[in-house]
Image 1 (cartoon, rainbow, N blue to C red):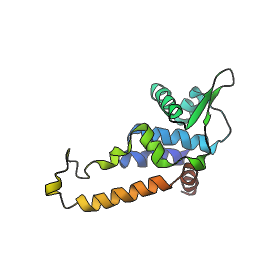
Image 2: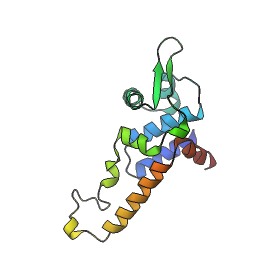
Image 3: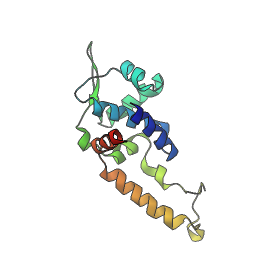
Image 4: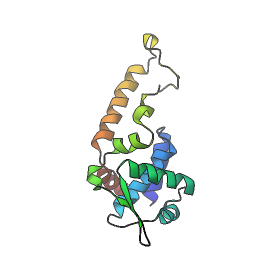
Length: 149
C-alpha cells in the first residue's frame, strides 16, 4: 500500500493529474488482489480516494475496459483483463490523455517553433522516450517494480 501511495506522489510530480494517480492506485491495487471483488466503499476506505472522485473514476475505468462491475450483495469491481495486458499509456490516455506530455517543459502556453527554446529538442527526445516506456510497460511489470522499491 505504501508503494502505491509513493507512486501517486511521483506521478503528481511528473505533471500527471490526480485522476491519473488515483487510476494507477486503483488498478495497481486490483492487480495485486486479482480475482477479488471490491466495492467502491471498500476501495474508498483502503485507498483513501475522495468518494465523489472515486465513483467518477470507477465509471471511467469501467467504460475504458479496465474494470467491470457486478451488481448485488456480493458485487463490486474487478479487473476486466489480466494486468499483463494493460499498458500504462492506455491508462493515462483514458483518464487524462497523453497530451499532458505535449506541453512545453518551460511552461509556455504555445511553443514558438520558429523560435524554439534551448530545451525544445531535448524535451522532444525525452517526451518520446517517456512515451516509449509508457507504451511498453504493462501494469504487472509496474507493480512488480513497485514491490521491489
